[in-house]
Image 1 (cartoon, one colour):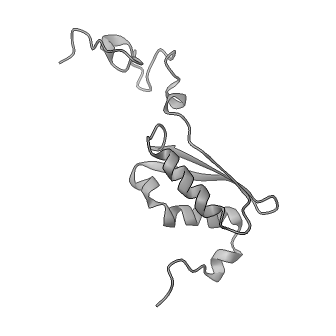
Image 2 (cartoon, rainbow, N blue to C red):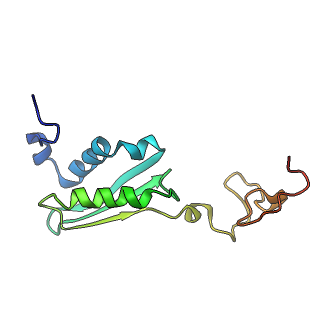
Image 3 (cartoon, rainbow, N blue to C red):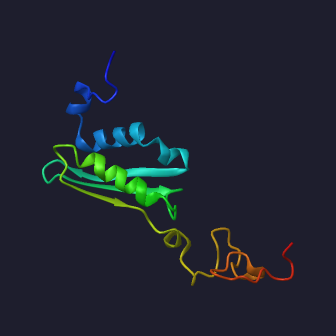
Length: 127
């Protein structure tokens, strides 16, 4: 019987970035299961710094802070990692915030109350 947490020789010989990417896909399937994405933006074995960015469904997710904490807690146990930054963009960053006039589909977000930030008036055409 093999230990599922055992690290193979191929894992220890691969570059740090590749090992972190493999770990994310193997040990954090919840990211992909919920429509999220993960990318290792930097992994420097000399400084021990790793930067990971979560996106997709992670943007604006109410539990992304838990996912972030779990990633940080595990990777800090790796001897070659000293500092981890996990970035999760705010959902409004991709939408342009409340000042953006059009949605991604080119529809005025304030028309009929569709998507207006904080609007509670759905408009007369609302069913």
